[in-house]
Length: 410
Picture (cartoon, rainbow, N blue to C red):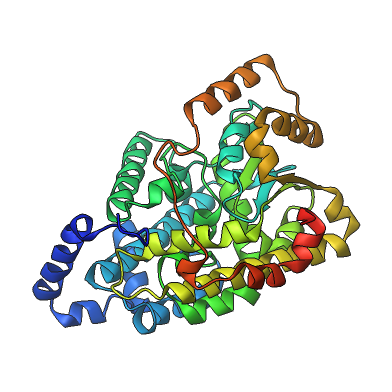
């Protein structure tokens, strides 16, 4: 590992070699067709045997993504193939989901009631909280594998779980820094970004690839299609299961909070807080870790600016809506990162009280065992700095002044 936090030359040799082989071995025309919308959608239909993608509101952002992959992402051969593969995976699963939905409309008969959303700035202990609360018998969190592949409730689900595990292994191999920043597991609770990515509305696209026009569009787009899809996806996941409240998580929900509240008017929210000067460089380093395998050109100062702008917008939107709508604000509980890190059992108890859940002895033992097994730094130390991304603490304090005054009091 070098001083900037990116894996060193020895660790990247295999990626460089693979890029050379792919550049020499595949005709340029192959790369030219990778990001053509009709070809991509046709290939997904051929691969699955299904035709109906459902609502067409994903087309506009898909076109922006495809343009971004070709014009601003500066993708190397691995990046181009990975971008194509990821979009294919999303489109194929979208087709499979629509077939499942249309085949048995009984899945629409059971509402998603009183879901709990974890949101706020990233790098605030949200993954720990998501995994801890998911241990409660009355709560249900979507896992990585079922967010990636619509379950069929058949023997093929084992293959889907194995495929999801293989994807995580490959991602960790290509981005060795990722595990120490954000752990993934096929059966672990997973963020909503993957479910929403099927609508081509997700912050993960720009985090992994430099898709500038798409990212600008995302900051002000209509998020309701993403949440209409989201609620349908949860209905398919919960079909045939005993009743439980959904436990959902994604920092990016702050960008679409108004739409989220329209689709889930009885939702409860856990907003996590931390000093943005600690969060922003950490999130910027995550973007660098994701992009490093897919491009040979990374502008870390630009990533710093983009990360600052994105989370400033998200927090401003959330502050405004909470101030504007008393009913919405009453469904929020605020938790500071320092509280969660130092007194997790106490914080979990407060959250259970707020959400109307009880803390059984069994649940408490499970939480204690989880905390013992998942000490901070288990997968290595995550190092980052403001200077690496040309950021100044004083500038961040100005950008997030309203947020700091209301929730940090520093």
